[in-house]
Image 1 (tube, chains in turn red, purple):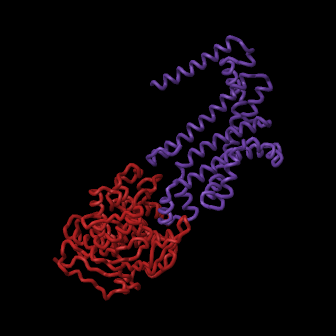
Image 2: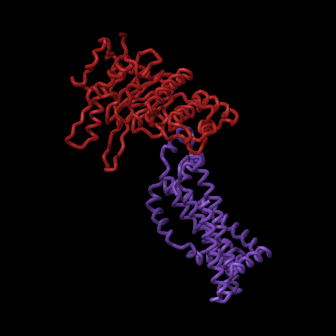
Image 3: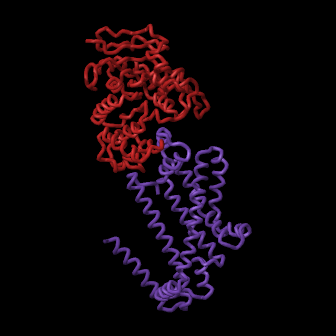
Length: 318
Length: 253
């Protein structure tokens, strides 16, 4: 068995107790931690497509407390790279995407796209939301066209591109349909076409397949991988599903629970296309899951009432 | 079929009762006219163009007044919905003003604008503005935030964001308020027209009273009801159906 997963400890190594050590199955023992890279990002900021440096986000809760949601996030993403961000719910991974998209300002730190700081929203970074973000008052075609219309692209060119991108997601026949007439999987394909049609450099995907059934999700994984390899876009993909992250990502970034910090980064070295049920994928997922479990337990403890300490055991698949 | 039958039976009974009461001559005919008398008054009114002119004048006024209300109301409602300061200050005022019947603005309008069409328009606007404003405010708040985010993300800003995203996204939530605004505008118009010689339907109604012609009064009342109902049925129901087809849901009514 070759090396499937390499660990890159983040700049802030969090002590991992013995109960969180990988215990099943014993890997080939070739998980080489590149600990010398501490403080040195895998991608140098100069060539990074997306560069996050020391991103912090805090906000005031209704009771007036100051809550730190994101804590000194550093992340460099190469052009054309597929990076997955995983973490328990409440770790701020969706918020991180909103910051990159320019929908909210960060409290401190800098977000760079091609070395230039992000100033509000821009069509070089397009977001694909979990669901319900397509415009129900427009047809499928008009939805795909929307970003181009805002950009002021002439009508003829818009129509041509709309047809092209609808064909790319195999929905050419549904150009005139309304959103409510489509299934969940079709809707997310429209969302992908709509995002691609503005020709962004970076796609920000916020758990886009979380609300879909397993078969549809498998299909969309294949489609997304194909579209990614055909269009060469940079993708930052947020999910709570570790297997999905391994299935799709070149790299998996693990965030901690509240405040969100980069706990670890994993380089996924498996050949593509990968299958969700492939044992090598499952094994790589287990590796990450062992680290994620601690964070999930912390999130559960925060969620449950005082005194109860729910724990997720190693048998649980996330 | 059953529904049509019920409809016919109900109106036939109503008509029969009316005819019966009129034919019994409990009250003199100039106080309680027969259906035929009202029919004749309607025919005569259209024959000499009085009603055509009255309808045209009234419709023109209500359209101008209502359009101004919609534009102003949308701006106001959007402002109140997106600014905490405006919500805390103006929000309460708007709700309390709603308890004021619009015709209470009539004396003020007379002093400000004089005895003319503008005074009528002012009353119409005051009658419907608040419904539209409150509906817009509510619609803006009920509208899922994700549409605004997606719109901004796709490059819509400022007026484009409002026109292409926020407005259509909130339409299902404000259509009932627009409808209510229309009803208030129509009522305010007729009331104001009754108080001032103005060529509109309200004046024709009062003319019937002045001439002791109850048939004409009832004829105009029927016209007012019919126009209000037709606009509601054609314009607003059509809009609701259109939205339902697009959104695939039943908009809040």
